[in-house]
Image (cartoon, rainbow, N blue to C red; front, side, top):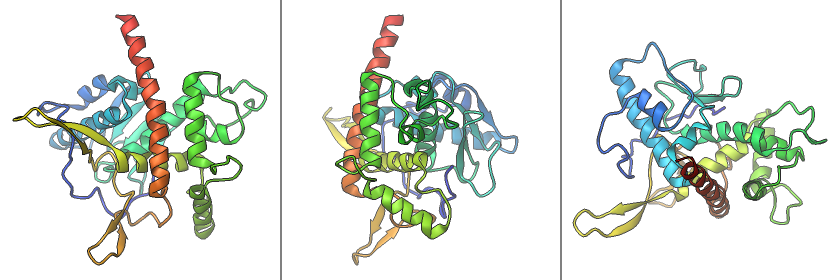
Length: 300
């Protein structure tokens, strides 16, 4: 679950490809294009608000699929992921993932910037059922079905090249370089939990979700085509609805300030760690994307 941020997504213009060709979409389009199970829109969401939100959610999911190298329909997790907008939210929470309902819920007025974080929770939950050997001696009787939690409880991954890369991603985020100790990122999260007197920052799924969104915000790129020359250049992809606030802002006087006031300093991986994390994210999801494309070609 994502803590509420002090500010909504920064008033920055999205920078990325036009996935919709300038067309208006609806939440039905979102459901069908991304292969979601079902989509619910709250009764207090007006028609105009629904249309605006549908465009933003569509662009955010399309950007995420692009960055991860996945077919858009893969984000629906075989239609097991549901989406709610302005429906079934929790007070003080801008967005959350409900494991019981397998629903990613975005608040009507405060859901911007949390989609990448909550998608990881949904993916972490989904992959726990398909990648972890829950029938093994170590897996039996475990109450959690989140892959990151099971991994830290020494539940083995099923033998598969994809799972080798998932294992490498978990190691990169959660363990030191020698694999013998918690990473500096985890150590800082443990200290934050001690300071606040509760378990949140060092929870495995939260650690992975923050690492995932931080790497996405820092390293997301897209190919921009110059309409006159036809030249292609790489540009930074910016989508404040997908993710925002994981980086420090450096002012002209050299002072740093956080975009995201509710998150204390140290809650996210450091820049060099993000570099390594993004490399493992691209290796894992890149291989997954190729496998899915091969599977889809075999169906046609």
